[in-house]
Every structure is written in structure tokens, then in C-alpha cells.
Figure (tube, rainbow, N blue to C red):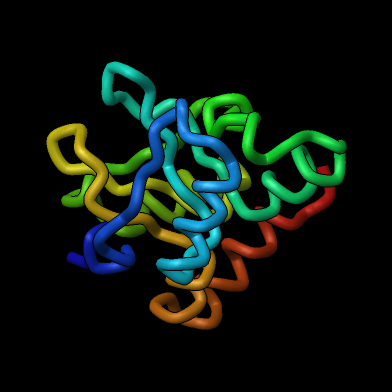
Length: 139
């Protein structure tokens, strides 16, 4: 059985909700990633902030990236899947929620992230096309 762990990119980087967007952007740049799970003060995941969020919701809106926090942009919670879960469950969860990334957890701790790029590399062309068709379908 292929698991979520088999699909994920390991060593996920998280950012505290209190971290400013300029620092979050620097972390993304330094690690070559486009998204960071956001942790609240109690250590629980509260959302994800993406490079696109920073540009569209903050910079393009005239906000100061040195003053706005990751927690300010982390909307709608975060989708997770257990590392040992069947990979088809992870892909189904992403398809149904129409999301391009899901955090992989083990005992509640983030251990990786499955992104659209991971799916493109690791799924069959047919399985990826099905996923993409669901995520990008008109509402």
C-alpha cells in the first residue's frame, strides 16, 4: 500500500502565527518552498500561508510585510492527513477540498507536505489528471 508518507516531501517547515510576512517570505526563499504551515501559540496548526497569499493579500493590498503576520493571512484552517494513511485518501481529501497542498502529520506533528508537484511526480498520468480535473473544475 502506498501511503501519504510515500507521496510527501519531508522536512516541512512551519512558521509561528506571530511571524511577520517578510520573515516568512525569507524562509520560503531560503528553503525553496512556496508555502508554510502556520502554528498558533499553543503549537496547533492554524492554516497555511503561501507565497501567493503574501503577494496578493498583503503586498498588492498595500500592507507592510514587516507588520502583517502569518496568522493574519492563515485563513480557513489547515487540511491534514496522517502519514500512514493510504495515499488514495490523501489525494481524495485534496480533490474534495479543491486544495493544492495538504500537511502530513504523525501523532499530530507535521512531518511533511503533499503538494500538487508531488502528485504530478508520483501519481500516474491518469490519476493526476483526475485530481487536477476536480481541483480546477468550474464551481
